[in-house]
Image 1 (cartoon, rainbow, N blue to C red):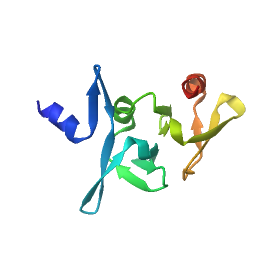
Image 2 (tube, rainbow, N blue to C red; image 1 turned 60 degrees about the vertical axis):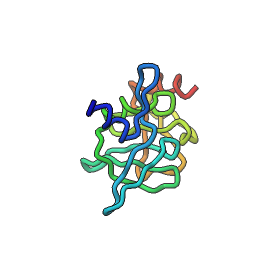
Image 3 (tube, one colour; image 1 turned 45 degrees about the vertical axis):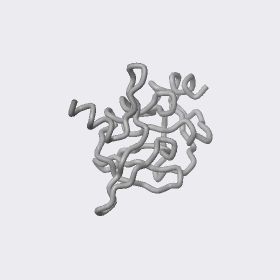
Image 4 (tube, rainbow, N blue to C red; image 1 turned 90 degrees about the horizontal axis):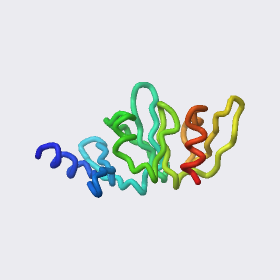
Length: 130
């Protein structure tokens, strides 16, 4: 019961046996701000911290791990491109094939670091992208 209550408070929707994050809450000072999944551009890992980057370019530290985010986000809308990044389909402007089979992504908004789809995930990423 406590786990279910925790999921509801965190914005995870349960339907047809699957659970997907509909929003997450970030803390800024003493304020808690809910962010809808439709406003999320990507999640990146930098300097041992994970960040949520909104489509307006604002960046927030989050407590969740990349593994947990990957499980909780809707796979129709989000894809884990490498160990340190998850991107939203609606934020992808284009992708360019690089040497070695990786893909370089151009997102809206621009991320502070270049984002690459790892070689091992490139084929499934292109299928997911449609």
